[in-house]
Amino acid sequence: MSRPLSEYFQTVESSDAYYYGFAPVRDFLRHPFKARSHDWVITNPPFRLAEAFVERALFVARRGVAILARTVFLESVGRYDAIFAVNPPTKFAQFSERVPMIKGRVDSKATTATGYAWFVWEMEPKQDHPKLMWVPPCRRSLERDGDYDSFRL
Image (tube, rainbow, N blue to C red; front, side):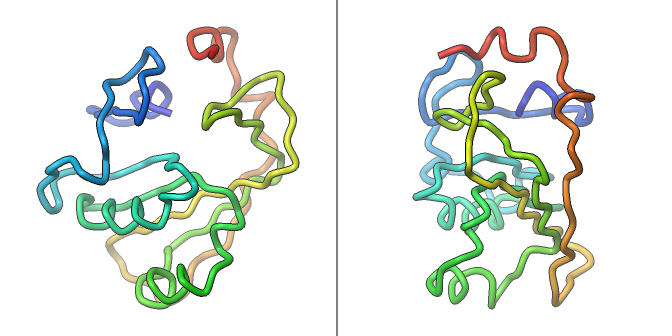
């Protein structure tokens, strides 16, 4: 995600849980980030840690948080109580086409039955109800030659 984000943001700080050849290894949940130290936190967290990532990201971010997660992240009484009832996302953007990911990395040749969405928390203005939206089919028009070359596992 860092490479395309750098086309829109002046500075992108990247890290990963494991070394994949792109970003340094850093534990997002334990790194001593200061409160409101980054404009945005945009991440594809490990699913089992997604709730903790959201809570930590809301501490770190000044302007907003966006996580790419499986759509079923919406389901859970625990997540509802801990996150959604207290601080619901401002936007929920469901991918209309499947995002084929293997080990957290998009793969041009993979297939999947798993749905993904962007969960977005914008700090201002506060909203009581998330805006539901769809990411229209776009892979064919947005993918470029070489997008996957440097990320083969």
